[in-house]
Amino acid sequence: MSRSIFVETLERGVTAHQAGRLDDALKSYRAALELRPNDAEASSLCGLALLHSGKGDEALPMLQLAVDREPGQAGFRLNLAEGLAQTGKPDRAMVELGLIIAVDPSNNQALSRFYALESDSLARQRNWAKLLENGLAWTKIDAKSPAAWRSLARAAFEDGRLLDSVLAFARVLSLTRPTAPELTAYAGLCMQALQTEEARAALAQAEALDPNYPQMLATQGLLLMQLGRFAEAEAYCRRCLQQKPDFVAAYSTLSRLRQGALADADFQALNRLARGGELPLELSIPAIFAIAHAHDARGDFDTAFGTYLAAHKLARERDALEKRSYDRRQDAVRVEQIAKLSEQLPEVTPLANTPRPIFVVGMPRSGTTLIEAVLGAHSRVFACGERPVMRQILRYLLGVDQDGNVVDESMLQDWAKLYFRDLPNIGSAAHVTDKQPRNFEAVGLIARMLPNAMIVHVRRAPIETCLSIFRQEFNKNWTFAHDLTDIADYYRRYAHLVAHWERTLPGRFVTIQYEDFVADFASAGPQLMQACGLSWEPQCLEFQSSPRAIATFSTVQARSAVALANGRAQKYRKHLDPLVAALAAGGVDLQTGATTTT
Image 1 (cartoon, rainbow, N blue to C red):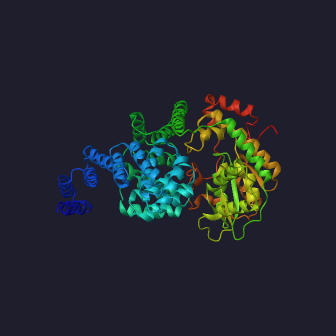
Image 2: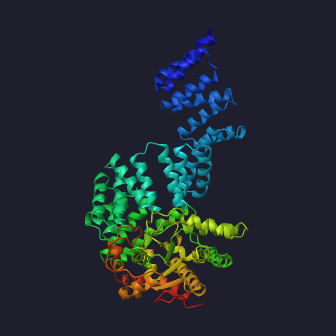
Image 3: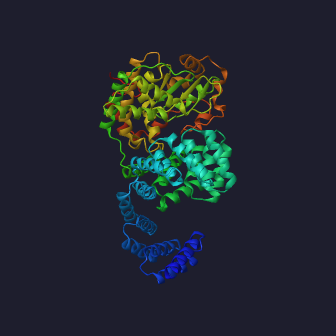
C-alpha cells in the first residue's frame, strides 16, 4: 500500500511540475520523501523543483544526494549538472556531464548540455576557432536546438565566415518565433555578408514587432546610410539615441554621416561615455575612433592623432585577448607561399552560365570604392561590394598545401562553384564586381580558377593610403592596421606582390593610379570600361545616384562628386616620420606607391 501511495504522490508532483505549479510539486515531492526518505528519484525531482523555484542553494544538496545514492543513473547526474550550471558552477557541471558521456557517448542530452556550457566558456575566452568546432558538433547531435545554431553563427562570424554565419542564424529563426532582437541580429549579419535585401526584410519585421528597439533603430540607420538615404539614416540614429542615449553604434553612424563633424552635444556625450570607464572594449574602440574623427574635423590634428593612438591601443588589447597579432615574418612567409602556389595551379575552363567577374583590388583606402561605383553604374554590371568568399577560398588553398596535398582541376572547379554560389539576384547583368581590396593576395588563384576574370588594381599615394588606414576602425581581421610601421610593412609586401602580378599577368591585371583617375575622370572613366571589355555608357559619370548599398568607410564620399581626397597627410606630417621612413626603406615610391625594387 505504501508503495502505491508513494508512486501516486510522486506522480502528482511530476504533473504539477510539468504544469508549472512549482509549490504544489514541492509539496508532493516532500510528501513522497516522508514516505521514502532514501529514494533517489524523489530527491532528484525535489531538487529540480527547488532549482526551478530559484532556490539553488537548497536544490544542490538534494540533487547531489540522488547521485550519491544511485551514481549510475544518468538522469540524476544530468539534473545535478543542470543545478551546478544554474548556480554559477559550469566547470563542475561539465565534469558531471563528462562522466555521463564517458559511460554513454551516445547520450545526446548530456552531449548537448556539455556543448552548451563549453560554448559559453569558449565565447568568454574568445576562442573562436574552437567555438566553431564546438558549434558544428553541437548542431550535428541536436539540429533542432536554436542555441546550438546561434552559437555556430557567432563562431562563424567571429572567424570571418560571414555566409556560414548568415546560414546558421537563418536556422535559428526557422526554429523559433523570431523576436525583434533576433531579427535585428540576423539583419546585421546579412549586412556584413552584403545581403542587403535580406537585411531590409529582417529589419522591417523587427520594426513591426518593436518600433522602439534601439539596436534595430541603429541598424536601420546604418543600412540607410549605406543606401545613400542620409537624412533618413540620421533620423533613425536620433530615434535610437532618444531611446538609449549611450548607444555607441548610433554615434558611430552619425560620425560617418557627418564625416566626423559631430554636433557639440553628440561630441560631449561620446566623451562622457568614453571617460566613464564602463564601456566594454567592443564599444570603447568605436567610441574613441568617433571622438578622434571629431577632433580631426575640428582641425585639432595633434589631439586627433593621440586619440587614434588610444583607439588602436584598445584594439590591440582586444586582439591580445583573442591571441591575434600582426606577425611580419609570418605574413611574409604566407605571401611568398601564395605566389608560389599560384604558379603551380592548373587553369580550368570557365563555368558555364555564370557572370564574368571583375575584381577591384588594392590596399584599403586606395580608391577601390570609387572604381567599383563607376563600374557598377554600367547597365551590364552588378556591383557586389566586398564579397568575403575569395578570402575563404584562399584559406582553403593554403590549408590544402599545409596538409601536403595538391590542388587539382576538380578542386578548383568546386571552388569556382562556391565563388558563384551565394551571389545576389543580379538580374540581366553579365558582369559582377568584387571589391574586397585584399583579394590582391589571391590574384594568382583568381587567374587560374576564373580564367575569364578581369582584375583592376587601384593604387594611391602610399602615405595618404597608410594614414587613412590608421584613421579607420577596421575589423579585427586587419591586425596590421594598428601601427603605422606595421601598415608600412604590409604596404611594402603588397607593392612587391602586385608588381609580380603585373609581370606575370599582362592584359588581365590592369593598374589604375587613383590620382590620375580623379584628375581626368572624363577620360579615365571610358578607359576603365574599355580595359574591362565594356562599352562606355554616359550614366557611369553619374554613378553617385545609384541606389545600391555601399558598405565601406567611403559610403558618404562615394555619393559625392569625384574629387581628389589627398592632402590629409600634410596635416599630420610631424607624426608620420616612422611611416615615411619605413615605406622608403621598403622600396616604395612615396608618390605613386609602386615598388622601386624588383
